[in-house]
Length: 104
Length: 164
Image 1 (tube, rainbow over the protein chains, first blue to last red):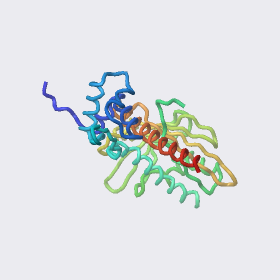
Image 2 (image 1 turned 30 degrees about the vertical axis):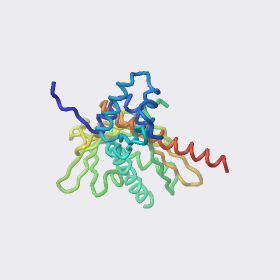
Image 3 (image 1 turned 90 degrees about the vertical axis):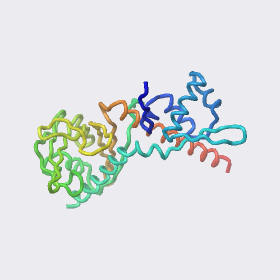
Image 4 (image 1 turned 180 degrees about the vertical axis):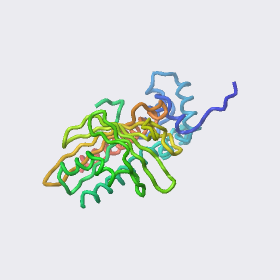
């Protein structure tokens, strides 16, 4: 099979384990062993998830001494936050308009 | 609250009584005057302010025409209005948004009105319903990562302040 894998933020967050990994390292960078220790799934499975996350641009691996740390790049999630922002923006405008209406 | 349905919310205060603010949502005449995207005229096609009643409207700006739909749910005069908002077609069927974004088809909204000393606080809480897995994933990842991210920051601030 040679279907080119989709690698974007949506792919990154489509999987619950990957969402948990993002939440975990959003607070502090962690190395692979520390991340794997938090999950019941195998280390290679976690490693694979992290590989996907790096390909999607949500995780960056940084070398610190002998350790390789996974760091979350939450800015990448902005793309998906877009519709929520759009909707909030819409409502703020609606409320501006309502305010004018109420002053009449 | 169902943790599967985390909400986003917007709060705004209005210098008017709760009944007056509530009424701005309850008639076609009022909605026609203030509802809808800036710069677009609203033409009400149907308006039934009752549980499961529909508000179907046309939004017009020159050649640009869109249709919108509310299906009202719980209504408690003058405290609460719940409705499901979506884009729609001319006939009042739910339709995809007229822009290129993975936007949920339907959004459930709950408006609550609280009055203190003549000032009415309006809280809008919303969450997508009948969303695709992708949209749900997007929605949850945003709320999860933001809440946990900020939670972590506040924990640190708490710890710092306790040391002082």
